[in-house]
Image 1 (spheres, helix red, strand yellow):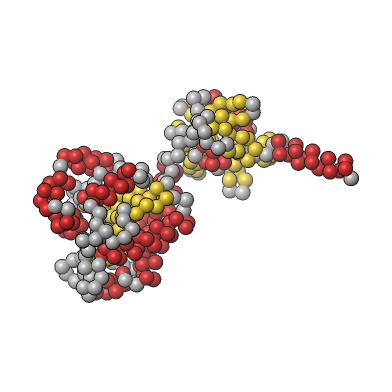
Image 2 (cartoon, protein in one colour):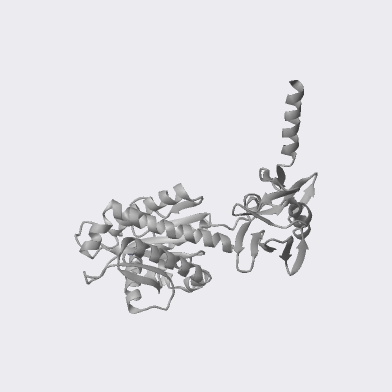
Length: 370
Ligand SMILES: [Zn+2]
């Protein structure tokens, strides 16, 4: 009996020897391990383990039969079903082919032990069979700032009924969206305001910048002199625009004149500093546009609302944001029917679900691109 127990323990011990590769970080972080398994006679690991320990992103390129792996701001190109990778124009052989199993890709441990320390010698080394790694660089989308439009002395648009205010509805929607995102995604969500208080447009963007947010979404309700006008539209930043977009822009920027100090405050926003800040946003225009398209399509598809499209305008609140940024007009409070819908919790939930889906899709793509 005792022999059997010893034999079992021995087997467990031997198996555990091959069950992981330990990764220690040169500066302080708690150690991690890469789980491995034997496939045939060769020790392999799931490529997604590299995400855990190196914050690597893996992008599958089926057309070219490649896997693009990004880590430490470098890119490796693995050729599917081969034992080769390309790095900075050179080929490296890690002896055993990549294996596809249950929809996952497995790399041989020889890649970790022989090739990785060679090609990333300034980041990765080996010591006593452990990998010693520099702290990983995490470029994934981690922080989202949600911005409920208006607040405090600035009510924003006022409903057709005169009883509902934009500042209240935007806060309700944003609070629900924050909860939805935090319950379902591994990201931090910060709000520019979480109660009925006045926050200047500049403070909102600065808040996003100082928290190193990866995404800024400002939520608004629209208004129009013509009560018939309804529908949803999403904006991203630009100075080029149509008359229609200019009208909404004037409405949303009006807060600066009305509540932040008149002409002088407007002048401040128009200063050279802000023109330069616009350039900060210009490098994110493509991403902002992509996000805008996703949100707009989801919102219109899910609610059946009038599709007013994705537009460009010069919103002060989007200026100077060092991240993809959009402004969503979820509907017209000046329209009787739309006001009625917007105050319904079930309709707000629908908007939140659409926005959430768009954000989730955006994060997926964003993480692959980094
Ligand atoms: Zn507004």
